[in-house]
Length: 351
Image 1 (tube, rainbow, N blue to C red):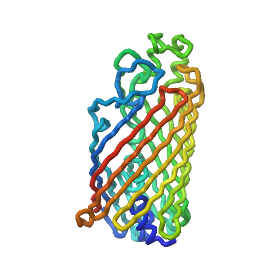
Image 2 (cartoon, helix red, strand yellow; image 1 turned 90 degrees about the horizontal axis):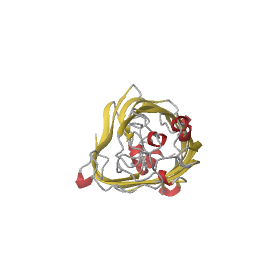
Image 3 (cartoon, rainbow, N blue to C red; image 1 turned 90 degrees about the vertical axis):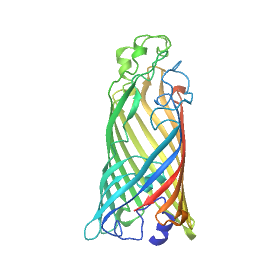
Image 4 (spheres, one colour; image 1 turned 60 degrees about the vertical axis):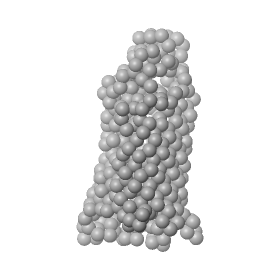
C-alpha cells in the first residue's frame, strides 16, 4: 500500500497509518490537545440532563431547555486530546493517555489510558482502560412520577484490547469488556409501592421480583472488526466495521444483545481534512419489561462529522476543528425513545 498517500488522506481519521515504520518519528513525548466550545442537547427520559420531574412513564422525552449545572448542559466547553510517550530502540513501545484522533474523528469521545506495542510484521496491539466510559450521573428511580427524581452515581470501568494492521493487513479487531454499578438503585420503587400513574401495564403494583428485573448493575462485552479500504485515484478512505455487543444486567428486562454496523469516510484536500461516520444499531432485550408488558427493542442511528483546517493563520502546529453529531433511538416502547445532538468548534495544537 502507498502508506505516504494514506497518511495524507487519513490525517484526521487514522494516525496509526503513518509514513513512519515505528509508532512515532522519535522517542519521547508527543500528542495534541483540542480546545472546544459548542452546544449540547440531550432528549432522553433516562438522562439527568432532562427535567427531574415527569408526568408519566409512557411518553417520549421533552427537551429540557434549562441549562444544566454541569458541562452536560446546553452550552459546553472542554478539552480533548492525547499524550503519548514512545520508547524502545525500534520506537515500538508507547504509553498513551487521553482520546486519540481516530476516536475523536468517529465520535467515540472516551478517555483512555494504556500501552501500545508494534510487532515486526506491522501489527499494533493496544491494552487500555477506559475509566470514564461507564461513569455518569443517573436517576435513582428513572420511573418515578409526580415528584422530583433524585440523582445517583453510576460508576464502573472498562478494558480494551485493540489490534490494528493485523499481521500487516488492513484488518483491525477491537475487544472490550466492562462493568457498571448504581450507587443507590431504586428502579421501580414507586411502581412497586403502587403509586398512582407508576403501576405496571396491567394497573397492578410491581411485585418485588418484577422490580428486580429493572435493576441496572451490569457487565458489558463487545467485539468489533473493521477493515481500512483505500479508494482508488486518491478519492479517500473507507473504514467499515461490525460490532457485536452483550450486556448482562442484574435485571433480566434490561439485559440485551446488539449488532452495530458503521461506515467512516475520510478525505484530505490540501489543508482541509474531513471524516463522516454513519452507524446503525439494533438492540434486543432478553425478557418482558414488567412496566410495559412487552420486550424492549431499540433501533439506533447516528451520524458524526469532523472537519480540520490545518496550519490556521500560518501556525504550523495549530488547526481549526469542527465537530457535529446526532443520535436517535427509536424504541418499541415510547418512553425509551431518545435523541442527542451537539455541535462544537475549536482549535487543535500538536506537539
